[in-house]
Length: 177
Image (tube, rainbow, N blue to C red):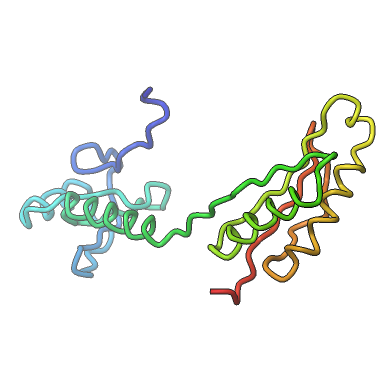
C-alpha cells in the first residue's frame, strides 16, 4: 500500500510547529492560550502527549492526553460499530423467457424460503439471442412471478432491463419473523 493513500497520523509533541496553542487537558482542565513550548512541558510533566486536535483553528487547539490509550479507544469504537452493522444478503433466482409453469413454482418456492429468512431476492430473466429484441417477454415472466411472492415480500421496483437481464428486486416484509 502506498503512503499517499494512508491517512496522516495526528500531529503531536515535537511535530507541532505553531508558536502557541489553545490547550486543554484530558481531564477537562483548560490551560488557555499558551506557547507550544509550555504546553509540551506541561504534557511532559504529566507523562502524557500533546496532540493537535484542530490544526486549522486560530490559534490551533491541542489536547494533553495519553495518545496510545486514545487510539485504542478509537479502534474499540470502530470494532463495536462494525459488529452492529446489518449485513444484507442478496439471493438470486434465475428464470428464462420460455419457462414452464411448474419450473416457475419450484423457483418461487426457493425465493419464498429466502424471503422468510430475511434475505433480499433478485429475480432475473436471462434473454438469449433473439429474445433481446423483445425484453418485454422477460418482464411478463417477472409479472407472472410477482403475485406469488406478494404476501412474502415488497417489490423494490417494476422489472427493468439491464443488459441481457430483466431484473426485479424483492425485499422481505419487516413484520415477518
